[in-house]
Image (cartoon, rainbow, N blue to C red):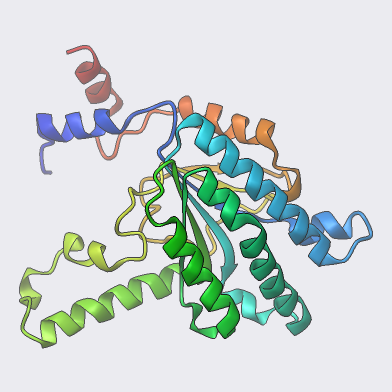
Length: 258
């Protein structure tokens, strides 16, 4: 077994913090929230947009630098056509209503995923929002839309394969580090904390590569009810964990007191 060096331990210690630098969220439960109140499913999605606004505010306040939200998976196209259409319209209206506020609060907005299936108007609004906010530094808000973790890895492999075919790299030298620059979140640190609301305990094809060492937090609270207090619970849970990245707890504690 490969022995961990002092620098390996130092890298792990450097990553330890009570506040995560990158939080990733699956916002589950909008439809069930609406159904329990006798409302159409889209009402739950509209309420969910309010929670996104609240979460962004808390992240900025606490100095969390990256927030990645799973808004629409590549599997969500299987939902009823009317619901998909309403979701696209909600995405568009949320962009038009919120992007200036995000920009004013120094939030960088971007979208990852294959957005080519979206309408021309929505694609245009997404690109405008990205250009407007690209220099902001308080928080990077990333929306995963028509995104899937397997798609992300496959498209990264395709880009790497093209480099190999063009003679730019030797296939024999390819490592994990060779692939990472082509992933959708290549310019962001891997998530420290993953949150899924709504009671399900799976990652549902979200950031499959990036969640390898992420701390998981599952809650039965439906997304429209996941307010500041609920987010604080998740952060307290995260702060109480020891992240070892393959090291032992004794190694971490010894390095802390060295």
